[in-house]
Amino acid sequence: MNRKYIFLIAVLLPLLFSGYGCALHAQQDPQYSQYMFNQLALNPAFAGSREKMSSTLLYRNQWTGIEGAPQTAAFSYQMPLQKKKIGVGGEIISDHLGPRSTTALLLSYAYRISFLKGKLSFGLRMGAYNYAINWAKIDYKDKSDLYNIGIRDSRFTGTGDFGTYYYTRSFYWGIGFNHLNQGKIISADLSSLNSGGNVSRQAVHFFMPIGKAYQVGNVILNPTMLIKSSTNSPGSIDLSLNVLLKERLWLGVSARSGYGWVVLSQLQINDYFKFGYSFDYGMNKIGIAGKASHEIMIGYDLNFKGAKMIMPRYL
Image 1 (cartoon, rainbow, N blue to C red):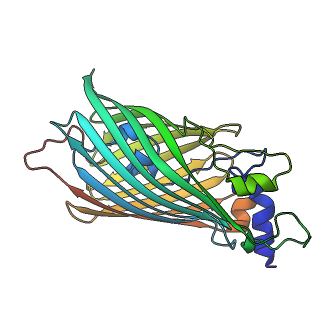
Image 2 (tube, helix red, strand yellow; image 1 turned 180 degrees about the vertical axis):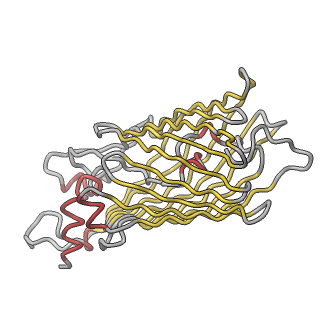
Image 3 (tube, one colour; image 1 turned 60 degrees about the horizontal axis):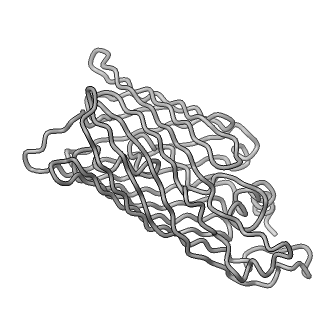
């Protein structure tokens, strides 16, 4: 077996089996380095807050030096409705980690009210996840191992998410909770293989992003912070500083606690299209072995006729 793949199984075992009947827990949802440019994945209350029809296509290839490391593709769409009091959004997500794959279809609804100098939004999200694992992709040293029978196991389960999001022309602060229902993510077939009959559930994920924009001369400085955690897992913090040049080009750097660094850029090609790229490099053992992570994002925005944005597009 390839040494890199052995390393993947050994180090990422908590991630791989966090939803498959083990007592271990970890963050099950994909991680995004460019979260500040599209927060719908973190919080359903973000839907419609850009005051325009907005779509995003993202691809993330994590730890390219390790075979079978996480790869994520996601498409999201959001827009305001009914004089912008209501926002709606949708997401399609495909996430792969070694023999495990996850597919999701999610719908978000947000209701927004005027509050202080900005808007306060309350959001709900519901959707369906398909969790699957192909045991045939794992080569066990012990050929008589209970799981070494080459089956593919999968299960559909729902999700219930809630969030709040407050934003002004130059500030945002949100709190999002994903998988509050803690849906079961283990199939009857796999359960029968577990002598203990363990049944795992979705971990509740918590996200709290905070951002503030400052104009300094001809540039915009945008420091952001993201606090995140999940059930029975240690939390982490992303600290970022982004700079907007000539209202077209973002350049930024992030520090992720317990991991390493991220550098990113985003170019506003025209009034409709934008292109973003981020490069992650970890300083811990898995980050060094994985070498690097790459994330590409393409966005398309369309203003409604006569619409007036509540805040500048750089937030």
